[in-house]
Image (cartoon, rainbow, N blue to C red; front, side, top):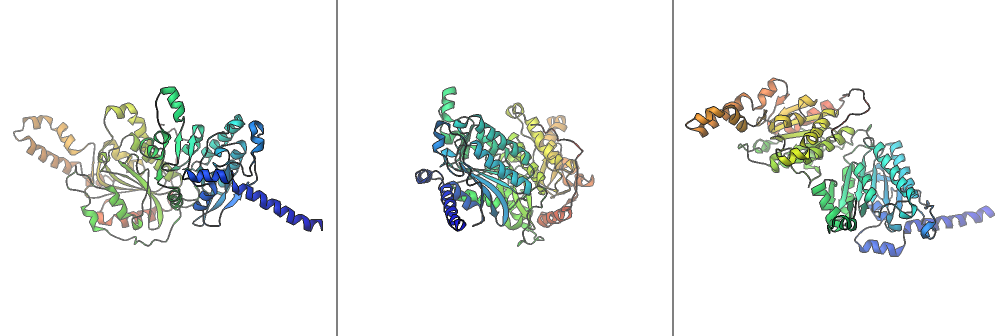
Length: 520
């Protein structure tokens, strides 16, 4: 009889504790969160994962500190919700910081809850998504809260290149708290809601005298356009979390898994004659490279990464015949597609991510070279530009490159060329490969002749035409085997699909070593 009476009593206690955990910091704190236009942790989890799929882990864990009144504020689950669920039926682990509990501050217990989730994700091989909304380290816990951050950072590094890691900034992330998102693969932010900075406005005013708002200092727009910290920015939390779901659909669960293939609705043999007129006859006229990407990939579905940052370089995810690919391309409409410091770093990081997870890299090339200028040279274009070169050379994932128009100098080499182990390299008839552009080359090679000519402009035009015929065209490179073929632009999609099908069992290796020394 004692057992029979005990079971209902125990269930009542269980229900009460679960209700406490789900209530977070209480109705008043939840109302305050909503008044700021922010969702609470469990609402965010519900938007991210498939309905009914979330399994919570450690809902009863509480902090152990008792000083400074913390003994009166022990809430089941502490300041983070952790667990696992499904996104489109595929496993994902996640943690959601709960700002209604002590400002979402990270305690020793919060850290250990996050460790457990990250360790589980590594063991079973599934992505981790962190929903960040925290006031930072819990001051009352001193070094224990700092140790908690250290453990998270360590796991971010160990998981890098093993499982995808995604950070979503849905509130403040200040001081050391910003380094966990910075160590992950992709950072999402919501305008007017998320902020990231090392030191806040008050500290900056005290030290430098500068006055700046939280949003001006570390808001979503700043990190999307200036710092490059944010890869994706959205107007509200719902749109942001739906975008996280979309991104996960392109990614494998881990580095030993294949990228998720979908049954394609788009014909892999689809030809597009309109591509024949995409590139203007005038070599200095621009065009929109996004139009080429949209017309070639499955159903025009392209998820651009870093859309507002270093816009002279395009990177993002698409599918070819149902299989995910990473796309890298110049954008001639911005700085003529030249490679500068920001574009180099943006492209290198994306190429290395794709390679880590064996996502094929499709490159569309129209690059006049590296950006000249004092600010670029003093800013380190040499070392930063080398990052992109390093990334392509190191990559063992399938690499298919299409030369669309210009490929001059070192920029030709870096953009997935045969010399950096490109697997299939094709060119349009409009492609040009040369040490430098024909106009500049003629000015140097024929300086004396042009100075003595009675009709310098006519002579220059004639010499430029001759130079293109001798050097600046794709056929010269093709005769050397540096290009595998020169193709009809209309055939671009089927040729890429066939190349990727051929490369799907590609195996390539690197020399035995602990790791390389990329020029950071």
